[in-house]
Image (cartoon, rainbow, N blue to C red):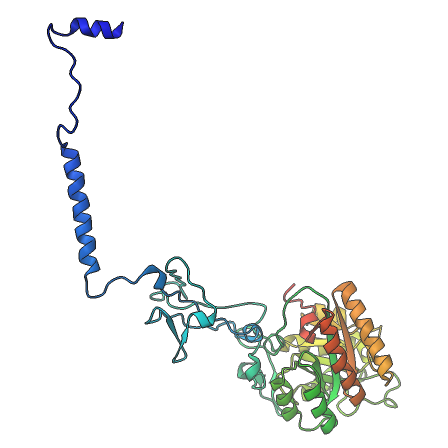
Length: 408
């Protein structure tokens, strides 16, 4: 009906005419064509410039090469490797030498990636990336034998460890890096170094670098042995002679800290021990069952360690030791030993103790064993560590299992 109505209204004699194909070009189409021609012309001009754009697939991705795991964990927190755009799309300058991107393990993407990292607010154009892990601010192992001057206080008897002005502790700086994994961990401390020259040399060279070495303060050439131990990758601690029961019949040696001595005298003897060398993370008792059970005697020692940023390692020989409570009170990183591994100098007995540590580590996460630098102990520990690693046990430095009140 609608079509009939339209026919009625149409003038007589005028029929409906079909539209003509291609009757003309609209003004909008002309304008669109002109725009396309303009874009093509500009693009062509750019393409013919003296310095054309690089092809996307050849654009370089500027990414700093990561160091090895040990070096990364040990690198100072303020390390800032430069990230420069390479002058050639397929090469990157590193330390004055050019290395291929493909050799550094970089993969090309579908286009260029631009990474902007501002080092400090308002510090010019972004050009560097900062790699920082708060849990690993220790020394690079290649320079671990060099003392950090900011952690040294001069004294009449030698260099004393001290917290740096920026808050860094010897415990943090001189700690050996480790994986940080949550698997079963065993920390081993071998003490008595520097007493025997040949025994010390054998311990440093034979024991795996993950084993912590403890130096006797009455030994010889401690500074030289410290450097050798640190260059070999070992974390080190100092042994402090403390009064045992039945003293002086059982005598740890001169400069022993005793219950009867005044606090100032004990601190003087402690500082003598601490000044024997540098680059250690803490101290461990040598004997001391009576001293460590006396809060009046033990309190000043622990407060001094807290002030200086050192850890306390209890060898676990005395169940009455007050060290755990006092360490927490004074903010001292604390480690308690689980067993003496070589009380019996027999290979089978030592291996049994080490296997017990492995079982403990699998049950609670970690275990701590303490021994002495006897030839048999060193040889047995060295072979056991190799096999334990194959079974998935991680051997860690003593600092890795410390309870640190400052870190919660």
